Length: 187
Image (spheres, rainbow, N blue to C red):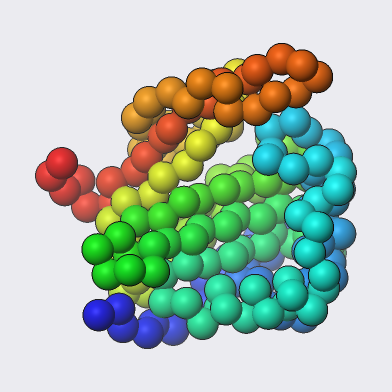
């Protein structure tokens, strides 16, 4: 049985805030996703974003807030979303200890520590919120060295390769499965 936990990760620096997304962020979050999707081929979507209505996204963000083992974080600067981290864990008891993580950051903020701040807030949430999370998985393009190095700094390891992860301009791009064992448990 998964117990409900209170989760309000927040991290403030001089000009940036990392906090959990709320339903009233839906419109701005969808706009952010369109922008970030148009800036990079590293995401599963492009400039079209995630093609979701604001009301449905607000409902999704509310469900994320209520979930004991999933989290949607936003990085904000001057009240503008500049980055996000999504973590969705399994719903069934046997897989509720593990989930998938994804990060995106507006291109103008690459290399400024936004991704690191999101990961720190996320790992703090895992460690303090009683989530029961023991495994974090992610998928990254094998040619995205900046992201791979970021994940390695926080202990993620290469767990395998996914061939033909993306098809971009007629060319296949492969991916790398990376994972982080939270407690260093057994395999």
